[in-house]
Amino acid sequence: MRNLLRKAAALAAAAAIAGTGLLATAAPAAAATYNGACGSGYGVVNKIELPNDRGTTFLTYNGSTGYNCVVTVRTNPGTATFMEAFIRTTGSSSWKKDSGDYTTYAGPVYLSAAGRCVDWGGTIGTATLSEKGTNCG
Image (cartoon, rainbow, N blue to C red):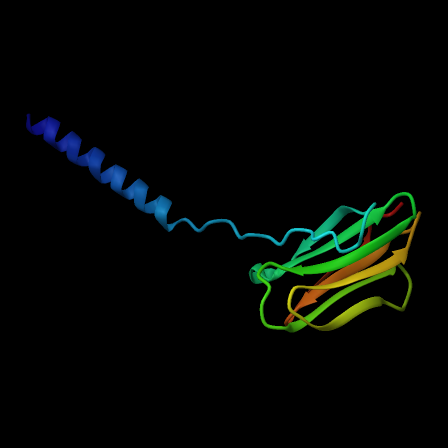
């Protein structure tokens, strides 16, 4: 009987520890979703998640026109904050961009880049991330 009580107590303790571990596990960050700002015919081909669940920069492409489009979308829209969406063909020195204080998203910014690689990225607040030489073709 004593052995049975010890086993029951050990199982209860293990279940409590396991349950606590589940409660302490953080839920995955909710990423921003593409909002369709580039218009019809554009599909998401790449994305960058900005840190601290700020939002996501989406690179889209329209195969029938050969244009890329970039838009930066906040995960949680709110008070206007500095945001940016930018793109250029790899090797170019000039960026096409949309910058300003926005509540929801920056962009869209379009670039004809069929058959070429692009550098692109976005900013929300003080966080800027970019990709270079991607999505060639």
